[in-house]
Length: 205
Image (tube, rainbow, N blue to C red; front, side):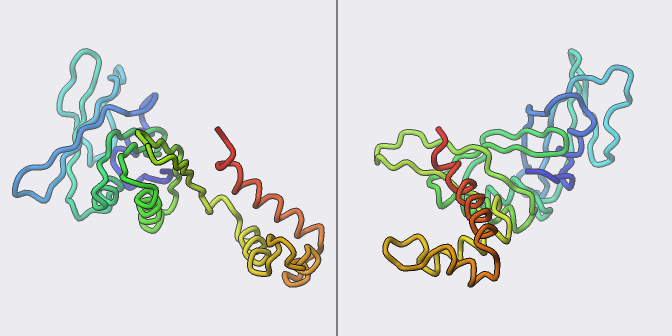
């Protein structure tokens, strides 16, 4: 997830060399506060991280341990995911971006989580999808429609609605191009680009 600078962990990752991937989260019974801790290599003679929301709790063996506290009501990527009752297995922050690994029961759950995150935070991408212990024989893949430009969406949506992809429909490229008010070559260019983006995740190993 890019542009995650509302998260103290993401902000901290812009001040250290390398990723932050040793992250723990906890809460106290009867409290609305969430406590998060992470470790970074001690930056030598530096005074530590500049973020006022983050405080260093101790240092040991060349590692600084930081902690921050937030209310459960605060906008948080992790909470959006966990509201769907899908547990997060790992958190990583690097150069201001957050990377999260989670377990989900099915592909529809993943689609719903990604949609919720995009609605609340904007710049969200699904990087990898792994399906384990699948005995059904299904072979799912998630296609990210955000990779299409608005024009590419319009072209492929119009072509589909007019039956361009149907066998013996009678609709040809010229018909769709005319409906869109563009030239035959422009239609072909947009359609080819859209098809490539949609087929790439399906055909890749």
